[in-house]
Length: 198
Image 1 (cartoon, rainbow, N blue to C red):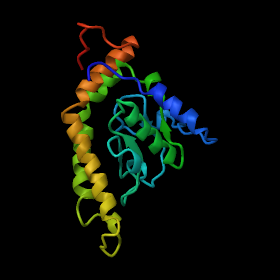
Image 2: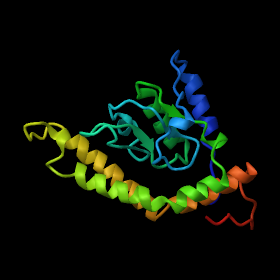
Image 3: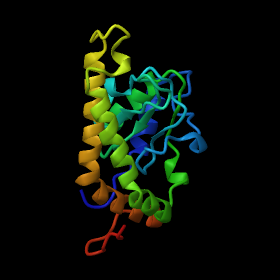
Image 4: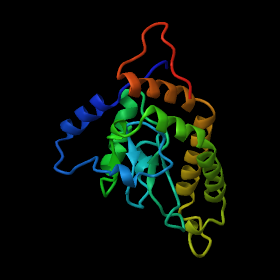
């Protein structure tokens, strides 16, 4: 995909159509998880129930910041279609604390996107390490007696981390170049117009 597809009109329609009395996106930018990829959606102070991948496994991953397999959720791949946007909105709707935000476009700038990209090695290294940990049978979240009660959950979460690494290696740069153009111009590139470098 060349350029950038804005998912927010679709997300707004989905939220309005659901007619929920509960605020879906009340995450605070200052509380966002540093692992979120640049874009409109992000996980901030989400709960530790790790439910986001039930609806959006190609977009949501979990951290271990609370220890013992507990942490918060973050967006590792922004949606680029209506169907993907629906998945992300569904994941945000399921999250107990309404800790997802959708105002990233108001905060990201071309310079901060480039800074995130320059520091991608940090998140890549973290994702590889936690994937190895959560894929191992010795993870503390598997149960105090060594049982595999949550084995499927942690294996799926580890796969999400590996998917994140694969996306960093192939696909994310193209997305961020389109997103950077959109942040600067608030429009799609015209034919023959080059996307900015990262």
